[in-house]
Length: 241
Image 1 (cartoon, rainbow, N blue to C red):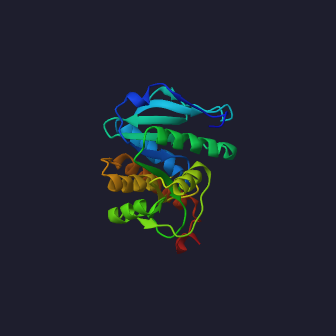
Image 2: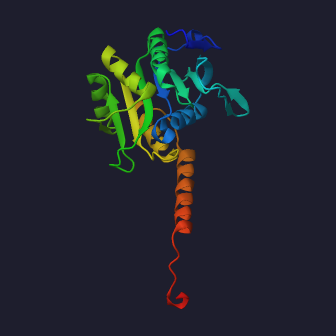
């Protein structure tokens, strides 16, 4: 592991009773879908904050949740669901993306992970609520096809830690699936985040309700409509001419 990256645990994750856990990964992507969806998941299910990935080259940022100060790049775990989550609420500098990816893959290997699922957003402009997947192996592809969670991406590109995890798992034959929801590239997208969580729930039979995200998406949609109405040129009838 690069000397400028360190993995710090506040609780010994190896003593939590996890057995071949699934890894769920969420980093800022289009519409901040990766971060929003995973943050929602870990706060609504029984995930415990256990550690962080730290670097002196990261931006000096702290996240505040439920009155608690937390590192923006967190490792969480759930004994109940036998899962590990790696959640980032900050953008990772490009020159550190490889080191962060390596740290995640090392943890995955140490805990003998069963499958890795990366959540994110994409802006293809093809389908309003489209869900797409990128499998790292043929067995992962067959699994996605069986579960009918979306469409496979034939051509495309992505960047950052998400991109490196896609590449590394493919090169090393690690079963991994990247789930991407069609998202708005201009602002945070709770609707897309809800869509990707629904697909995750379908993929691995995870009981997650997205009602809060759906409500937030509806409110945001209404707000956008009201803004459009207010900013539209007034077109009066004959009596105003």
